Every structure is written in C-alpha cells, then in structure tokens.
Picture 1 (tube, helix red, strand yellow):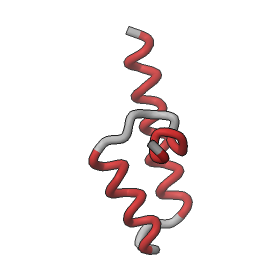
Picture 2: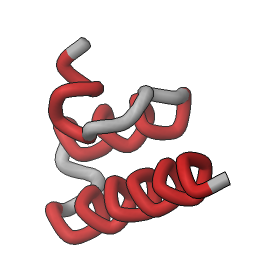
Picture 3: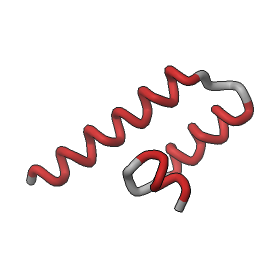
Picture 4: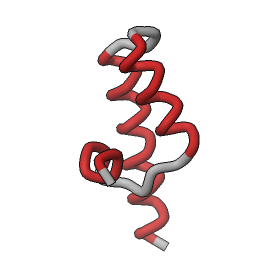
Length: 49
C-alpha cells in the first residue's frame, strides 16, 4: 500500500526491488526517481488506450 502511495502506480516486482536497493544504499535518489517516472509514463500510456 505504501508503494502505491509513493509511486502513484500499482506496484510490481521491479518496483519493490528498486525500493529495496534504494533503502540498502545501492541505488541513489536519481535512479529511484527515474524508475518511478518510467512507471508513471507507462501508466499514462495504458490510460490513453
């Protein structure tokens, strides 16, 4: 539920993995933001059809 609130999208396995990497310090803010941006773009494409 928190992942949905943070990203604004339905969570998937890759999103969970990215957040785990971020919390462990293996991914930085920029990488996480880029992943979330891609999720939102994909979600917008689905809504357009």
